[in-house]
Image (tube, rainbow, N blue to C red; front, side, top):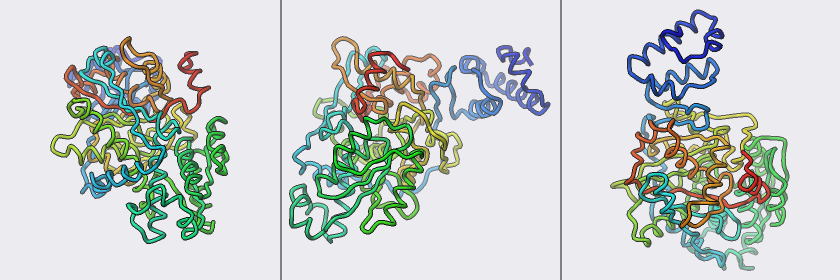
Length: 469
């Protein structure tokens, strides 16, 4: 075996005691030698379990993905069969403009900054890097309020027989509408930012909110929601089970409404409205790039939990730049890589991830994809990526202390994920193959989204100042 594959550790070979294992490994190694992937194999090999090793061989043989040497960065090329793209119209230019018009009616509204990092672009070997900074959104330090507020307004519009265009902020908050609509209780599950957005919108609209948070949630994030008047708790459940609990309670409560940015069979209207609300951020970024006299981005990196944000951004840009769309990359936390696993399987079917999904990227710790968004993503994404916590932490630190001449950006653990993936792709030698597949080079103009600021300031300081992870 060592003669065929000299860099395979002896300890690993000894573990392959079953003859079927040994034959499979030997066969796989010979195939790899034949297709001349030995250098890549050697660079990517690490301490895999036998199952991981076979999966990895299959991926290399099919050319669909890979690991770097310490599993900090996983990637899968999208080879899934295309569908009829039924849900793309949800993110049409008109639908997203309606959402932005609604948000503009709020006194707290203002476009969040689009920060250009020319020195960082030069360092990474790119033409341009743009960062959409959502730490300034509505004073809530994250983008999520865009979706929750729009979905709640759409629900009220539906219940009162109105069009959303007839319900700007001053009407929604009026005594007359409150008397007509009455009071509903909006239930949701959250890792932090979505629940905070729902609680804020409920308070502004004179409604009730109940928020469930998964185990491992920090006290700071709970208190951020509590301050907005919502009933909030931390359950001994993971995120996806918290969603099920919130939906169960909403169904059992008079005038209870589940407001969740993940969709499932029979629950699609509200998640669709949430995605349209997220489209405001994508529309702003496109207009800001144009205002800076820059060409449309060649690449867009966006992070994903259930995939609603990614589906919103990619769906809108697929419509906006339909003749020449950018190359799209979706970034997940490695502990909750359900979209990556779906792409790796390659059949277009949804894959889920269970367990505690422990990661500092709390906003991405979701194991069950949004069915609406999944359909959009498998039609338009080029590469699915999953990163480890230390990669995300590196991204946070690089944005906080960029190259001299570039402005610093306060980006939280989930917020920095898309930039972190870009950074790893451009600086890690083990990422040579996915970098080439994406065509990232000196002519590339990349847009990334920093979806949150320091939503947990203590954790942020531990990572950025004290060097944790």
